[in-house]
Every structure is written in C-alpha cells, then in structure tokens.
Length: 203
Image (cartoon, rainbow, N blue to C red; front, side):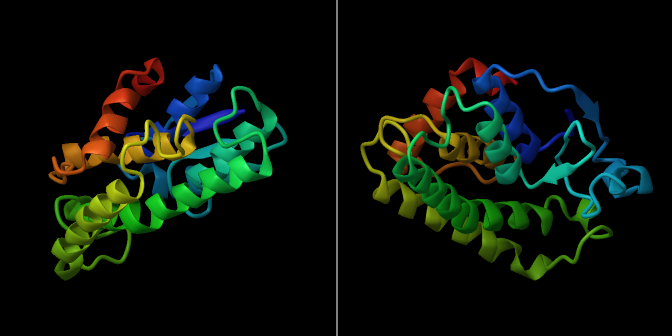
C-alpha cells in the first residue's frame, strides 16, 4: 500500500487511525500548498484531486477518509476502532456521520471560504458570503453534540473509536484556524484532551 499524505485534518485522521492499529503506511508526500493534488500525476491516482488517498497493492486507489479507515479496519480488525459487532459498527458510523455532516463540513467550508480563500478560490467553487454562517453552524452543532453525549468518556461511551479520531482531528484543526471549541462544550473538551494525550495523536 501507499498513502498519499499532505497537511490538513483529513490525512491526519487516517494517520492517527493507522497508528492506533499499529500500522506503518508507506507515504508519498503531496504538496497541497503547491496544488500537486490537482496535477495530472496525482489525478491519475485520484481523479477527484482530493487528499488523502490510499493506493492498494493491486493499483486500486481508495479516497475519502472514512472509506480508507473502514478498509484498514476490515483488513486489520484488531484493535477494533469501528466495532466488532453489527451494533457497535452501526453506532460508530452513526456518530461519525453526525460529526461529519453537522460539524466537519461547515467548519471546513467556513475555513475554505474565508481564511483559506486565497488557496481554494482557484480550485473549487467558493462562497465567501457563506463563511460566517457556516462557522456559526459548526459552533452550534458542537454544542448540540456535547449535549447528546454529555458525561461520556468517548463519543460511543467507553469505546475509543474512529468517531473520536474524526472529531479530534477537526477540533484541533478548528483551534488552528480561528474556530476554537466553545468552553461550554465540556464533554467534547475532555474527549479532545484524552485523544490529544494518545501517542497516535502525534502521527
């Protein structure tokens, strides 16, 4: 396998997931700032031009971080980070989907359409007028999530899962791009701190 890596929270989530599995993925660095991911060489691997991507031994390329992590889970099931039973898997996927749709997407696009606009305006359709609203939605949904999982050790209760990794990568990203976690979100803050202390967070 080859992992096409770059800066950003998406590749970081996969690196952290792999580290929790004890996997060392051979990496090919792609310069996102120089738009190497939009060049012909990379797009032959991943036509969408997005980061990251995992090239399998047979030449197949898997992109989208949840799909990559689910592939790694299926091929290296221990330790389980999505689940060992249909119920556990469904629970992890449910919370991951909620985090993705309600928090990750508005947070990331809020950045792309404002602070990240000089980078992204020539690469994707952008809506600068929507940036403040998207950031506000992300913050609202973080408080919403905090209430839903109040008092838990991890998103799925006592299981550390991909949902926690996904959440941590983007909470840390938000902190770096002017979208810090509201101090009122005490459960999310404790999850963030616990995840940050894991060795895999340095991957």
